[in-house]
Image (cartoon, rainbow, N blue to C red):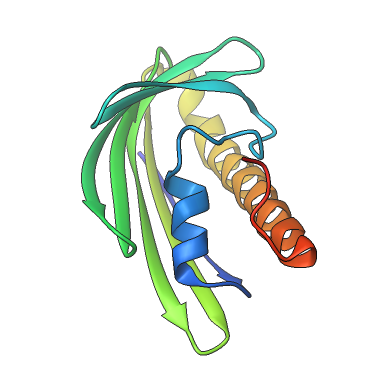
Length: 141
């Protein structure tokens, strides 16, 4: 099992960060995704641009403070939790992701993969939120 925890600051409201992260109908800002299929209120499926699918089950939804889910695909299972906090000059998001590789030979690669995936996600999120700040409105919707 590998766990990665990252905390980032954004110079916009916690509500804006929450809305961008949790709105599964507006995911064009995610550079790795082709689409997200919303199955029901607690289940969704991410389809990557490379054709890979991951199934998610929401286990906590506490707007605008906490969103958590489990995830599973052919190569891994795990969980993700986002803690959203208002700060004096914006918002802070702490992401904790835990992944278990399903194949023994993948285990040495999981920590590096996890760090790269979190960095890509947070870089994409920052671009989306910064772009909206420059334009004065939310974008990508």
